Image 1: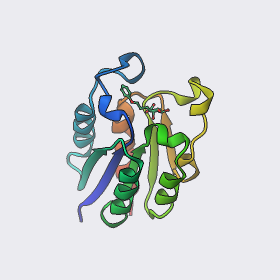
Image 2: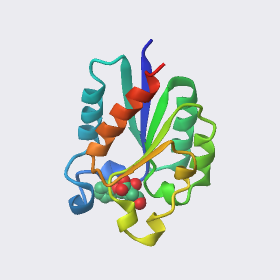
Image 3: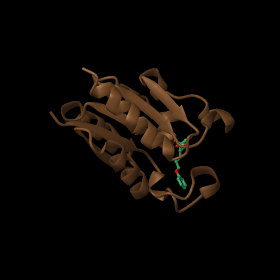
Image 4: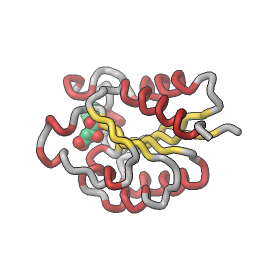
Length: 147
Ligand code: CA2
């Protein structure tokens, strides 16, 4: 049975590789998608990567993942720090959830130290750069193909 991982990205992450490379690196979201697909190659797992600047769209995609995905990897962007709506949506998802941040948020401003999403996440990654997406994909494949 083919299983699917949905990789959801929140506000401003469309600018990845185009601004602030000193924080977020030079790779674009397309590069990230290629990294994750390469990680899933040879497994019976498909990868879907999406990005939106709108909170409601992220909530809708989490609802969609309820029907279609075995696991969610989410970089909620700034929504991490204030969106109870994203947390509530993730709480309706039954599979594993990995929260991912490209930067090491705990080294940055104090408002980035709190995450609503961490109240639901089964694992949290921060500071691995875009390589974190590949590592998270590998870990997620292990989780959803374990049984
Ligand atoms: O480190 C991360 O991945 C963050 O989730 C990124 C968010 C930030 O609000 C979180 O605190 C940590 C911001 C995303 C902005 O993405 C950009 C990427 C490239 C250039 C400009 C913005």
